[in-house]
Amino acid sequence: TATQIALAVFLDQLLGDPRRGHPLAGFGRVAQWVERLSYGGDQSLYRRQRGAVAWAVCVIPLVVVSYCIESIPGLGYIFSALVLYISLGGASLAEHARRVYERLREGDIIGARQQVAMMVSRDTDKMQEPDIARATIESVLENGNDAIFGALFWFALLGAPGAVLYRLSNTLDAMWGYRNKRYHRFGWAAAKIDDLLNWAPAMLTAASYTLLGRVRQAWYCWQNQGLRWKSRNAGIVMASGAGSLNVLLGGSAWYGGEKIKRPSLGTGLAPVAGDIERSIHLVQRSLTLWMIVIILGGWVLA
Picture 1 (cartoon, rainbow, N blue to C red):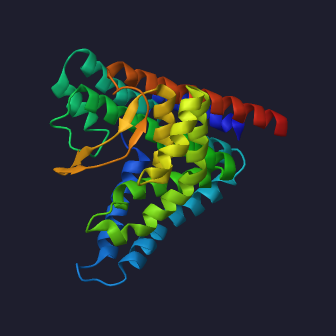
Picture 2: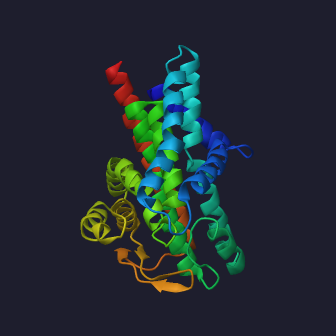
């Protein structure tokens, strides 16, 4: 498992996401088709149950298939490493964040808004540099867990089926896990399952961020700020990262033309462009720490 993880991380850092034909894009189209069949009309009953069945139809068959292929000698080894590579998004995350950083460094606020809009769901048309930097850093810290450490955790625990289960669940949460009129009930199962699968990885990610920066500040923010966030998993990850970097995140943000009040996370001053690069480095150092632990663990178990 340790060598498979090392190979997958190497491929992610070397190649990034596949430029064409990414399997998750195909899965997204299948999920949209399943949603259309399952959702029903506006007055349909049992919306939560329909959403749970839709989740199961999308995820369980692929988990079973991955288990069967992983069991094949020789082929299963390569297949599992490739599954984890596809499940990771560390290089892509850093690439998107650096595009924002480069626009800000050049003084191109409009270009920076366009780039950060590809990373976050909030309104970006009136953002200034601190708002753009804050949104980018929040995305880097949170997606460090979602795009890297969550997949590593479940692969280390359950192999390729674990990585498939985690990545597909995370994808469905991104598609259906909204608290709006359409998805509040239909997406309930997707959101809850994603929360469950992310609980342990989020704790470990928060611990990694804490150990690799300003330890006392990060620990304080983790324990006193992260639990107030609407998503506990995202809250502790971003709070520990903000404290570790000594930047102030959270606060009010605009979504769909509505100003949403959010708790403050972290300490210090509002972030600037350079703090984006620091957040990327924090995630990369955390990945290095995870790899050291995984390789040493594999050596001990062997």
